[in-house]
Length: 68
Image (cartoon, rainbow, N blue to C red; front, side, top):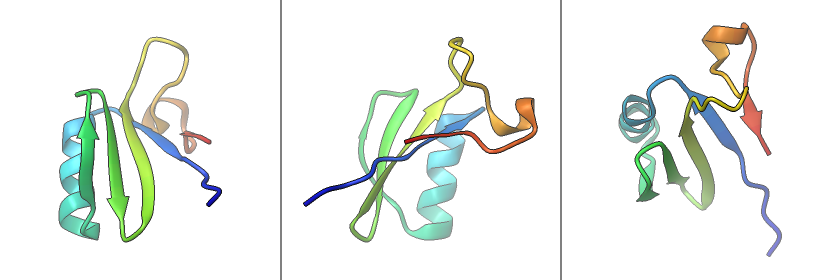
């Protein structure tokens, strides 16, 4: 089955993961610390901490940031 993967950049990955678990019932599939795969129902998505590669958090650049 085809899938689209989304990765959201956030300033604090562990805090964001806990929020998605609490607020939306996400399940943590795996974690590398700065990158985490979460699942809501059958929809996987990723949370990633800000990296020094020009991919900044929404707060820093004033818009949403998602890698597809």
